[in-house]
Amino acid sequence: MSERYTAGIKISLKKFIAVALLVSSALAWFLLINNYFYDIFKFGLGVTGFWADVGLMLFYSFGAFSALLGSSFSQKIGRRNLLSAWILFGVLVLGSILFFQGVVFSLFLSVLLGVSVGFGFPSVTAFLSDSTVSEERGRVSGLIVLITFILIFMGIAIISFLGSGFLGIILFCVILRSIGFFSLILDRCERKIVKDNSWRSVVAQRNFGLYLLPWILFNLAAGLLSMSDISTQLQIATARAIGISISYVFMAFSGVIAGLFADRIGRKQPIVIALVAIGSSFALLGYVQIPGTVMIYYSVYGIAWGILFALYLTVIGDLSHSLSKEKFYSLGIMVPLIIFTSSSLIPTFLNMAKVSTGLISPILSVIIFVSIYPVLRASETLPTSKINARKMKEHLNKIGKLIKESKE
Image 1 (tube, rainbow, N blue to C red):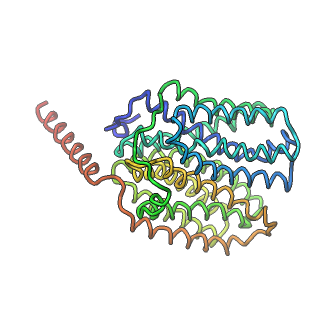
Image 2: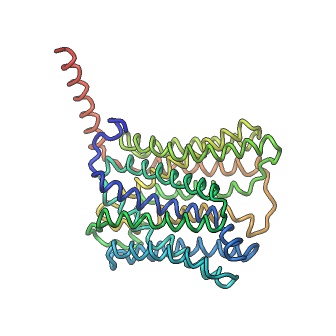
């Protein structure tokens, strides 16, 4: 890794590995379960159609609810004990699928899966914040986004290679969830003693609201695009399939780049750039549908997701300084992700016909552009003193190199 990226990094390698394994395995586990949810229900539980849709909705609902509940319990239960029980619970819930079938169990399982996603998630992300200082948090978060998508790529590849369908999904997801235990072995994952702030104080924090609203609107707009009738013509369908694959690659690497810039120039500018880019791509997709514009849209979509994912892991940690981080992360990460995944299912639940892309894309584009305003009004979360100190250090290093070269 380049010297520029690692300059000023204070987190130890051991601590970084513990944080990265814990956070990335939890995120990848959630995204893979979401991706293969219907396959698990169909091939493992023998449930399809309406009841599978209900199960998915229960999964999302209890994921969000348990995240809020878990963040309230975080101070009453030691973080290490909470995370140990939460990881083990997720493994047991997944394993139980091998022994039960039917509609009743599938609905019960959906609730348990939701809890196994949400309850400990605020503590996981709070551990990231507790383990980093503001001037390195962006880069650490960017690397975690990269590792998350590497795990997802590995999961999809291994499941496809095994060709065992349901059993392959369960096996890999159990292994993935168990990775979190290595973090508990490497580090005690202790919680910093901070002031226990109320939910009202979190919601009332002006800067948090100004940053949270655009993130929620972005997730909502990205989910609602599933309502559009993107052309099924062969050329468009091929471009879309390629574009989706490319978007995952961009998600992985744009987070790393965004993390570097976030620690150099601050958090606001990369967030605004990502929102402007995705808003413009929405407008372009609605204006004309040809293979080129579809590819551009999915490429920009991946870049925007990677930037915003890494930046919001960072910003929420900045905003929750000296306060209960779990409550900030449950509202700032878990709830928006649930909004994204659940909003994409609106057409399925309401049995709606697809809406013209030319009609819905401009609306979503306007929503995104409107969401930029709160970010512009928000205060930068990376202290100006940190930005100036970095610039001064880089300037002095350049002077030192020039003096050394002149002597030679």
